[in-house]
Length: 190
Image (tube, rainbow, N blue to C red):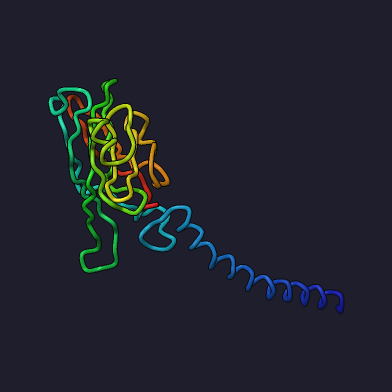
């Protein structure tokens, strides 16, 4: 009988020791799941993601780009879920959409990744040499604040200045003769 009593005592002590461990792992599950898949509510694994989303897509037609290096400015409205009465915050993100010489259409945010200034499209390399202390081989994006220059033909590569990386790009969806800007690359300044 003593052996049976000591077995049940061991089982009771093991269970009593396991309950705090199980509770600790249970409390860690929610933040871990939110890290792996951000959602509006804790443990809402199948719910809608709380990542930024486009309020409306910006649309351009093929006819808007008559020649290579045609550059058009636009404003992209992006919604962020916020815990305020409206339930969201809408940000206006300026951008450029450009037709490259190979016929490809690309779009970039105009917000400089260095410190958040709004950069310009400079088509003439000699103008860039005068104003930005760098003479590129072709049209570029150039930031007037700290003179960062981005080569559009090379995917927005930084070719001069303090910028740490290329500007964020927009995702473009082609539908017939239309180009829809549907989302912005994740990230922020710097």
